Length: 336
Image (cartoon, rainbow, N blue to C red):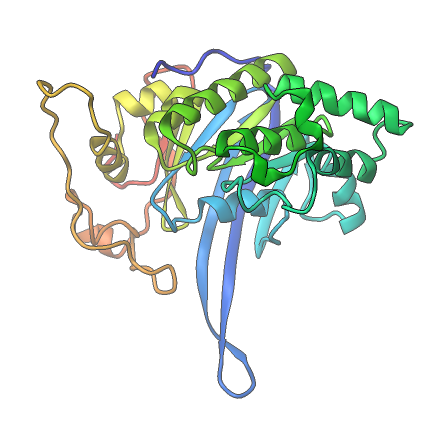
């Protein structure tokens, strides 16, 4: 896949996440007291500029989806701040948040589970229009639904059909149309192609890129397929066990990764050329439990480059040497 095309970036920051934390309490005993907590997201900070796509990658269970849901307050964060266009949305009331959801939407991972099987496409796309008071009459809303179907590559006859009558790729197009119905500026794409066949994945990713150009959208694109992320993203952030390991321009991160975990992830990408030999970095052991993460650097028990101080001192996310115009940050004592 080729590198992500240039988007309508303006330099304006649309989303800022500051020191975001999400812990899930574990209760036990007769009185159901909190006995421990799962640290799903630990002190995450980053910015997203208007019109860009920030890819978010990492192993299953590292906190990617939880982070995306916390940003939209589908899950309430434990602490930290989320600024959308300068407004701290963690401080606003549920009523204000509901109004703001016109500007912030999500596309879920599983198109089979995220659509109500008892609703037609018309019902599914009409619902957000009615909730947010878009359109003054039913005829106007139906015309809007037709435009959404056209935009997402679906036939207008689909309006009367139910989700089970569509293929996986078509269902995901319906999910995308539903997200676009309220004209959002920012969309969290929570592994939107992972449940689809490879050929369908390419179609959906290309559709999302076309929509981004046409509508000026901003994406947080969560995925575990590194080639898909490379294709669609302008910048890429790598998470490990609820922490940010590295964040940089996509081309720079893929060609010059600095964090040992990023290097290991990229070494696992298959190359469709039998004559090309690439060194595979095999990580020892399993991912530690977020219930009881290791001391020091969370990655040190599996890191091939770990040293003594990695066991006791946690590395802060810091600026590394830049090879492009955008900052390159990493959380490793020995990354340069």
